[in-house]
Length: 257
Image 1 (cartoon, rainbow, N blue to C red):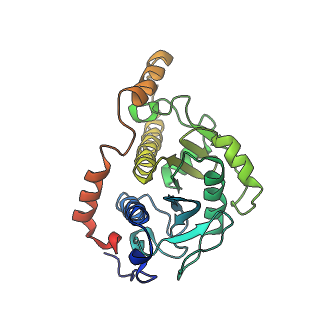
Image 2 (spheres, rainbow, N blue to C red; image 1 turned 60 degrees about the horizontal axis):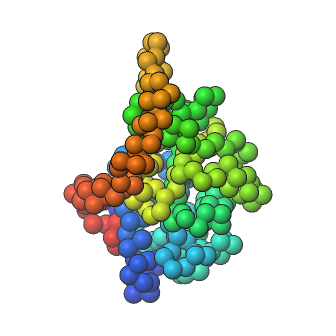
């Protein structure tokens, strides 16, 4: 359990109910990724657009581990990088570059997640990218973007290239770096990230077996990708409440502080 006090104080009293719910979901996502081992100390970032405030978004404080993040400790910033509410922590500059690029270009997106795990970094270095090896990966068959590595994302000029490469996709592999997912809300972006990470883990394990691979036909791959869109609810619709219940069982209610 985290021992970090929820700061700044009385955040719940200062924000709308819709913003508070977004804060709860975003804090829960941080804690879930911690439980899943999908963290990199303080250096990856999850964000969500503030409901009703198109120019403002919430992002994790630069200096807290994911298991320390709570609804009240999230930092609210604008698209110019200014902190617009009281905060004891700042924002990761690379996080600002990546997330501001997304919210500036994609009005349909209300949440974005960026991680670099061992498996995702491994796949991001492989020339062929994500392979259609299993059912999880087929969700993104011909439907995932790629962005070439340009160094640590501190140059704001990179934003236009991030925007162009992501296009209308909901997932992108950042070459030699990691993963990015976006969604209409936190549950969608978080659950997409979970399954994309699972796809990467499976790919690394499969290739490590050094055996001849059996791949579905292109027709089956395309059919499966379409099934995810046409036959199933959006990611997070069915899973999110169950995941939050599991989080509260495993980690307690600290995310809601």
